[in-house]
Each structure stands twice: as structure tokens, then as C-alpha cells.
Amino acid sequence: MTPEPQPTATYEADPANVHRVLLLYSGGLDTSVMLKWIQDNYEAEVVCLTVNLGQPGEDYEVVEQKALQLGAVECHVVDARERFASEFVAPAIKANAIYGNGYPLFTALGRPLIAQLAVEYARQSSCDTIAHGCTGKGNDQVRIEATVATLAPELKTIAPVRTWAMGRDEEIAYARENGIPVKGGTEVAPYSIDDNLWGRSSEGRWIEDLERAPEDDVFQLVTRPEEAPDEPETVTVGFEQGLPVSLNGERLELVDLLEEAAGIGCRHGVGIVDHIEDRIVGLKVRDIYEVPAAAIILTAHEELERLVGTIHQNQFKPALDQKWGYLVYAGLWWEPLRSDLDAYMDAVNAQVTGEIGLRLYKGSVRVVTRSSPNAVYDASLAGFAESGGLFKQTASPGFIELWSLQSRMAHHLREREEG
Ligand code: ARG
Image (tube, rainbow, N blue to C red):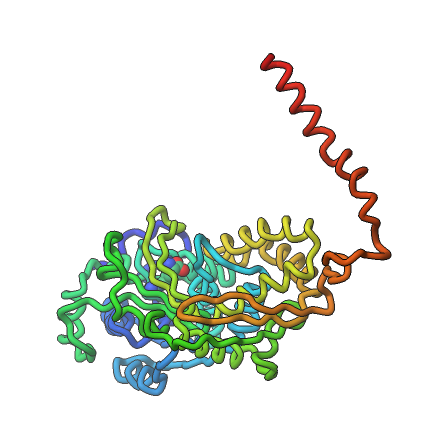
């Protein structure tokens, strides 16, 4: 049996040239089966890489032992939380990055870093090929392979799930035959979960039935809003130059701040998104997202940014934000346009310093207070009190006459045509 059919793309591995494979290993069923399957079908050595991006409740000691027990020649566990926060989540905050109707892109932001680390470790461990556990239907294969092909043209990739034609039952049978521990009951397929410190997604099972409302057991992170505390809680987020630096007045490093914000949001049932999404690969998919940290931080950031921006900046930036979000969603993290856009994001965010207070209550996040030394706001001008200085109210009619001039002319022309 040839493990791979004829490669289509030039970066796909030719089985004859696969000798040492860097496998992106999560410890789950697919990648554990893969670890054995690659050794058997390619007669290749496997080096495992497991990346910690802040997925809650993961025991990396156990994952590493499992990899070695299944024959990995090396297993590397990398804590990349800080790099993820500062190089990927930070620019996303400055770009108010959301795809579609509320997906804050945590997976899309994580994949290029995971693939970049795969390249670094593959080179360091003299691997010729990178293997991952993505299917042929999703976005993640695009993000990972586009990254590898961009950063390391000398490395090839294999994606066994795309080609091995095993269903879940066959995988479980393969695992049993090969001494791979299968955890939990095997009758009901589990949700397909991906998570990191910026959010968590679930796909599969009843989620694929659009007519069904979410079942409670999907929410492993966020308290269901109906069970959240009866008392609202106010949280203040402090920003400096577009990045969050404090929570309720306490200065925190970005990773700690995001984890702390997630904890507060979880308690109040904040950040649940039931999302239909247009994938890069044609299909539509439904995801259940739990994004407590993003629900708090992005709401606060957007509000502060609008307060310090002019009307022209505030009308212009959302179009660029959307473009930024789409490039990242679509697996083009390394596209130069993204760094061009980042230069603009940084320029705007240089002014985004101040504090936003948010009230959290049973699933909702509402801005209640704002303050910034850079606010383009003057209470004495905006209020009803007579203003001195910058303009005279008596000048307004002159403005209105010119402001409405073209509209008035056009309106009268149409009236005349209609007789
Ligand atoms: N739909 C989201 C995205 O494309 C989440 C994907 C989650 N990945 C997964 N392997 N479960 O970014």
C-alpha cells in the first residue's frame, strides 16, 4: 500500500524521500494513531512537537510520555504562550480582529505560530518532512501548509488524515491493535475541540444540525449565562498604546492578563458565540465558540480606539480591520499586506491609552466608563453649557447651508422632473 497517492502540490512529500518526520502532536487519538502509522508506512523516524498556547487543563508530562512510549525518537514540549500573546494576539487586538459575526480568530492566530515552531524544530532535529493532523476539509490545513511552504521551501509535508481513509471506528481498531491508549467511551464521537488562551471552539456532533440549539455539555469553559451570578461585576481594563496592561488597576503581563480576563468572563457567562462560518475551503460550518477573554478585551479596545480617533479615522479603520482579519482567517499570516496593515494599526494605536470600565452580567458585556488623556472629547464643548473658544454656535447656520447644498439642489431637480 502506498501511504500517499500521487502528490498534487510540490511541497507534498514523496514517500521515498521521507526519513525523519516532525509530527505536530497533541496526544489525542488522531495524532497518536498517526505517530505509529508514519513509522509503519514510511519506515521513518518521528520527532514529536507539542505546543502550549495556553489550552486549559492540558498535562504536557502525560503527552510527552505517551509520545515516547509510542516510539517517538524525540518529543519537544514548547511553552509558546508568551510568543503567542505578544506576536499574534497583540496585533489582533490592535486590529479588533473578528471574522464573520464574532469569531476572534484564536485558532487562525495559533496555527501560523505552531507551523513556524514546527519549521524551527524540524530544522533543529534534521527532519525532512512535517506531519499534521488536519483533515482535507478545514482551514487549519491551509494555515499550516501555507506557513511551512512559505518559511521552509526545503521541507515537505504529509497530512495522513487526508489520505488514510480510516473512519473513527477503524482508527480505534488500529489504536487497539497497536497498543495506543484510547481514553473515554468510544461509542459517542467527542466534539472536535481546539483551544488556546484567546478562545475555544467546538465542532461536530449535534453542532452540525443547524436546527438544534446548543446542548449544555458543550460549554466546558464558560458558565451558562442562566447560571451566572445574579450580581453584575464591573471590570476596568487599562490600555497603553493599544495593548491591555492592567485589570482593575493591577498591572499584569499580557499572558496573565488574558488568562485573568478569561476567568472573570467565564464566571459571568460572557463570550459564547454560535457561529455559521464561511470557510476558506468552500464549505460553511457551524462552530460553538467560547471566547471570554476576547469578549472583554476587544470590546474595551474598540471603545477606547473610537474615543481617541477622529470621525475620519473611525470610519476608515474598520475596513482595514476586516481585511486584516480575513487575511489571518484565510491562512495568509505571512502575506506582506498584513505587515503593511500592522504599520497602520500601530500608528492609530499609538494614541490608544486609557481605561474602559465594563459591566458583566449573565452573558452580556456593556461599556459603562471611559477615560483617556487622548480622547478627542471636550465635555465643555459637547455639553449644553455655552462653549467658548473653539467655535460659536451662531456659526452653525452657515455650515448647514453649505453642508446641505448639493443634496438640496439634487432634491429639487428630481422634484421638477416628477412634475
Ligand atoms: N472554524 C474555526 C477556524 O477555522 C475553528 C477551527 C477549529 N479547528 C479544529 N481543528 N477543531 O479557525
